[in-house]
Length: 330
Image 1 (spheres, rainbow, N blue to C red):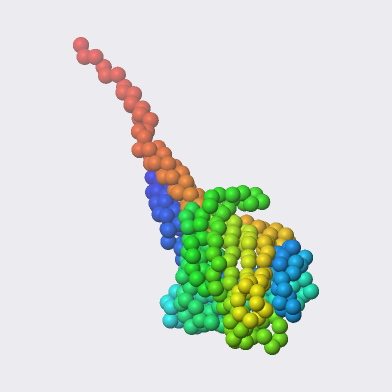
Image 2 (image 1 turned 180 degrees about the vertical axis):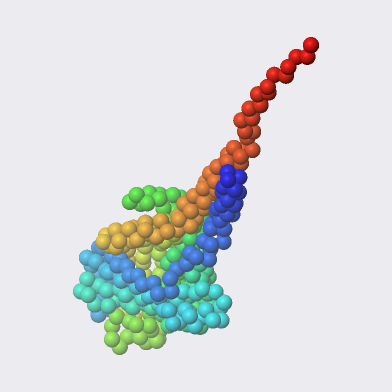
């Protein structure tokens, strides 16, 4: 009976020992993915910012500029692209809506970002765009890969439509969460005017006729939780200028927007809580379950060997028979 039990335990030990690497290296890369129907929004603020008054074409100080960013998963578009791409695809329809202290629109900037649901690498397909113009992204945007590494990544800048390195600058503690800090600097770059302008009657085409151009620079900062690859916090030191042309009335340049953009406090708290819960799910597949299965397999193997040894141990010696004394012959 002991030997039968030891064989069963041995089989279970082999099963769990084999399941450990399968969970980490086979199941996790296939199961961990961004859901196609995900929706998220974020509110950022730039306090004591500089903003262009298009009525007077002069820059002025304002109390606050608010940026509302939304990312909405487009399930119908992702399913359509998956048929030809042959892999799980996520399509995010994004919108960055900037409004001044009076609540009026400053700019409206739509995007469509198409990427691999598992690796976050961009997938090039019809519909990929920034502000209505087709683009071909290289590098990541919005989110880092699962199990983010301590290295530089290529990050796509939607304003400039270019990809540039975003540098790993070390580990930090952000509100009790261990994070990797990344920073990217985009130098002054000539960029297109947004298609939707804040003043009725002004279009990118009409501005182009004046010879005035738009320039942009930013220092982009992200605090990324490495297990999930999700940013828990972000900032931008953002500057825009209009340069040259008759629109400026002979001036060389004027500030269109300048401010230190930061996430609003209530969104910081909700983002940290969300990332913490997602982190636990990823750790289950990458650490807790694989190590748990391995330890369980080792324990079952030890128990199997113990029972096998007990089954092979010699039994107690059998008692010798008592023989009747034989008569002694004369």
